[in-house]
Image (tube, rainbow over all chains, first blue to last red; front, side, top):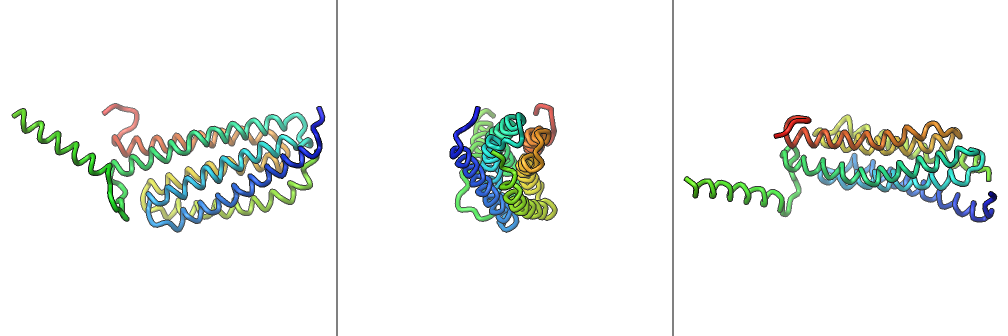
Length: 139
Length: 96
């Protein structure tokens, strides 16, 4: 089956633009990872680097592979594999960084340094106080 | 359509950008004051390696490299989950 020729050029250009956007986001995320002051600020850079820098270029690779006829039949394998990897990263990266942030806050291994208000810590303290007062009522 | 003449110019430029960001992530892995910073940087490094392998499979015209990308994407998530579980409960696998 022969595809309409201008459509192939459009898909190739779209894929190359997506890969270029991904490279830029990756560089921005890496720079932020080095320059930002502490862990909770670096989470922002990590999310830019993983969603913008990994999901978007993988979709671009899938689009480029779709129109690369020099790959022969294997272009479908590369395109599908890249799409599956993009979907996995899209699901997995936010969950992983959220788990890391939650455990870093809960275990107090990282100080929450530029802090305006910390509702999670207040909630934990209120829960502990309520527990202490309930135990006091029982005795 | 034969895209190899375009890609042979386009992909090395992208490789340069990706290698620069790899070195910046490795700086954070080596310097990182806490384990969480290192884990976050290893996460980003693994996801970027997945992209890099996918681009390499386009560059070398081979489909066999793409299977490694899927495994790399899953591996970083397991690292996250283990580290957060260890720091929350101070043990792995058990119930507390």
